Each structure stands twice: as structure tokens, then as C-alpha cells.
Amino acid sequence: MGKEIKKIAILTGGGDCSGLNAVIRSVVKTAIVKYGYEVIGFIGGYNGLYKDEWIELDRRSVSGIFHQGGTILKNSNRDNLFSYPMKDENGKMVKRNVSQVAIENLKKHNVDALVIIGGDGTLTSARDFYRQGINVVGIPKTIDNDVPATDITFGYRTALDHIVNALDALHTTAFSHDRIMILEVMGRNAGWLALEGGIAGSADVILIPEIPYDINKVAEAVIDRYNHGSRFSILCVSEGAKPKDGDVTVRKIVEDSPDSIRLGGVGDHIALLLEKIVSPVTGQEVRASNLGYIQRGGVTNCFDRVLSTRYGAYAADMIANGQFGQMVAIRNNKMVAVPITDVVGTGETGETSKGGARVVNPEGDLVITAKNIGIAFGD
Image 1 (spheres, rainbow, N blue to C red):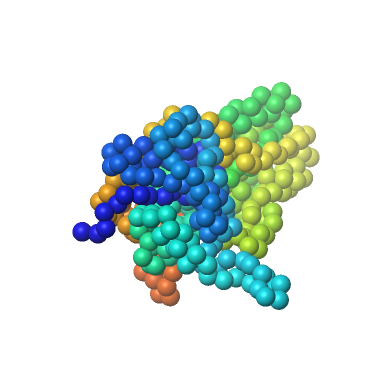
Image 2: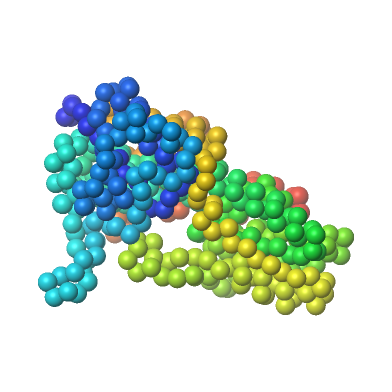
């Protein structure tokens, strides 16, 4: 038997996401009600752990946050404590391993276990803290739904709701003006948001990273709709969509971020190309909208409230059972614990663990279903 658990801590890293507060609430309430633990939360992800910025978490502090998007613990997606940017004695920016400072802070507060909620970058550091002797339990977080080893992540369904609402709104203006409307959505290198959002939002064309597109094929689909009496078309485009023999559209590079490449702008790019081909034939104008960070926020929907509660409660159970160095996952609607290395890899040369993003199967049921009802993918 390991050391008796009396006190735990929570932090949220990476980007914000609907359902984070629901997870925090569930961890706290289960830890207190079922196990009698004390709970604290570090503010601003790993940066708060490094700077020792924290708050007490009790039943009162998590009251009323269930439905709220974002996180009361705040997020940071730039703070890798194993490679932390700071100035040296000459004023030059260097990167140093300051993880020991974080470990000392945990010891100072008598924290027996740490719940880390985040995506691949956050969970990579969780793996590394576990290797340094910290009792870590991970909870996967991303609206992109691309975390391997789990069937679905919280926040994804709420983001889908925002996408569908946006597509419904674009339909009215597209119909009224006989236009081609493009909605660019998030997802990085996984097309789940564009695919399921596009199907539910009645998109006519869906472009995802897993199926490189030919702009001429996209134009053919739009012109064919026009020739069959549909004077407008809706495209749902993933930010990671790329042309055949081409590459993704990069908005900017953030050097001090673990995920330095910021995608964006593919919707505008496709709009320019598409209008040059289609407009001379049909006379249609092409307009693009980027849903952006609206996808990440807002009130958490019913599905994600329940899913987040399951994730948080199971994480507390894992702590009580001593299942450290592992992450909560859901498989076949059952909560399970999986090694964090199954998600982010071992970080070693020649590693054999799974790792890698969970992406859309171009020949899977969802894509086939979409094609069966006439949705084009530009392939």
C-alpha cells in the first residue's frame, strides 16, 4: 500500500473548453463527499504550479459553475516546466528545467496526488512529472476530439452545437442571396468537428484534413448543385484542410508554445479560389466566415455536463485506487484507466506506445454516410 491520500490538487492546461468547470466540480465533490480529501487548485495551469498560485477548492467554491464554459482555474498553453523560458544572468532568453520548483511546491502543500486536465502537451508534462515520483492522474481535454485511447472528449459536443447553430444561420443568408457560404471550424489535424458538424448542419461540401481536396472537384460539386436548381451552397471546412499536393494554411507561429503552429485562414483561401472558378459559370459570390473561439466557449450542453461529471468522478476513484501515471478514458461507454504513454507516447527513441492523434477514417462509416446523401469532399 502506498501513502494514505489526504490532499489532492487540480490544474487545467492548454486551451479552454466547455466542460472544464464541470470536471473540476466533479473531482472536488467526489474527493470530498466520497473520500474526505482536501482539495486545492493551481491557477493558470503549470505556470500556477511553478509560481505557487493556488486556491482552496471546496463544495462552496464549485457551486454554480457546472454549466459555465471555461475554467475557474484559468488556462495556460505555453508553460512547459521541463523547458521553461527565462532570462539568464546576461539577460538572454534560455529554456531551463524548473520542474523541481513545482515538485517542491506540491510537497510544501502536502499534496498527495495531482489531477492534470489537458490535451497532448499538458499530458506530456503529466507523464514526465509521474516519472519524477508525482502521483498523477490525467483527464483528456480538447474540443477537437482527437485524443487517442478514448472514444470521446468533453467539450466536443458543445463545440458541435456552436458549429451547427452557425451553419443554420449561414443557410438563411446563403439562400436569400444565392451565395456560396464557407464556415471554417477548428480541429487542427483531425476533421471530427467539420465532419459531424457539417453533416448535422446540412453542409453540401465538407473539407477535412484526412481527405485532401481538389479545388476543381469542389467547384464541380457546387456547379452541379446550381444546375440542379440549388442556387446556394454551404461548405464546412476544417482549419487543417489541405489541397492535394499542398499543405495546411498557417495563421502564425508561436515560438514559445508546445504547439507552435496556429492554423487558420483556409476558409478565406478557398473562397478566393472557388469564386474564380464558379462565379464565371453561375454568377454566385463566395463568402467565408471563421467561427473561431466561439466554438470553445459558452454554456456547456447537457451531454458534456454528464460526460464531464463521469470523467471527474472516475479520476477521484483512480486516486483512491492508486492508479497513477494513467488517464481517464471512455471506451464503449465505460470509464477506464489507460497509461498516459498510450496517449502521448514514451518520449523515447524507438517507442512502441500508441501516441498520435485520433483522426477521421476516410473510409469509415461517417464519411460513407455523408457521401451517400450527396455531401462532397473534394476528392
